Length: 331
Image 1: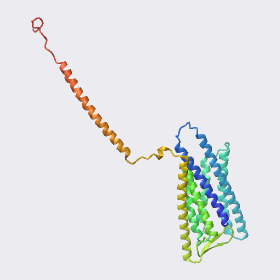
Image 2 (image 1 turned 90 degrees about the vertical axis):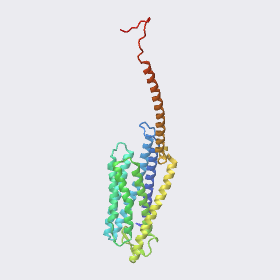
Image 3 (image 1 turned 180 degrees about the horizontal axis):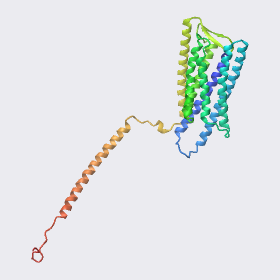
Image 4 (image 1 turned 135 degrees about the vertical axis):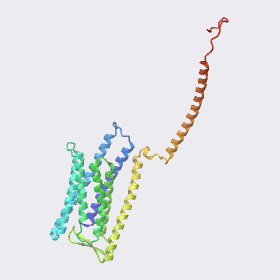
């Protein structure tokens, strides 16, 4: 395939993942910063922006999958001319995966651009999930040379593929979630970075010392090492490279996320500082103050009621009947 093909493939994955991540992050921030009311004038605008971003994503996937099919066809005919049966079968698998992504992009574009074409969203997401699952099986089962160092690179490539497949599975349950798109975008970026690293490791002088590339055909190759020590060093270097790529990705994502948050803004409810235990202390102080006031009022009210009762009792004390004109009215 060559370094150029790996560069194009890795750059395409990074571009798709970056666009998907930025679009999903921007959508999530806008949804959190605006009230969710039924009559929101910006709802239609957000819907149009989402359709536009999805259309660009499908176009990028369409171009990359089409280029992958062409490259696999060239590798397939080269394997036939070289009488490499393993290489020809391997390219047929790559073509099948590329056609699945091509079908996913075509259906997605028709759904976004044509209102008359109604395709349930879970079916579209299911096609994407099948494509990632088949890609996972391709690199998981690819063991052309059991002692080849490239197998370690393929094993590490399963990590971003698993992230993409898992996010696509979650999207089946909640198609409108921006966080599943964000996770899949990050997985695509990591996958593209690692494809670039594989290209430089296989087809340049950056391969581990004591190891060299051996090609049977255009798409069938292996990285062999001189001895057991060189083989283990090559595997260790691959693991170290993957960890460096992962750390770089986390740093870049944190930096870009801070810029996007500053540009789009976040709701004040999410940014308001609330010390731990401050609300409980405020409630306790209110309760104590309320109890003290109630006690004083109760005491005053009880005193007033007692005085009123005494006066009422005095008013209703029976008074002896008085004598009229000096005569007693008794019997």
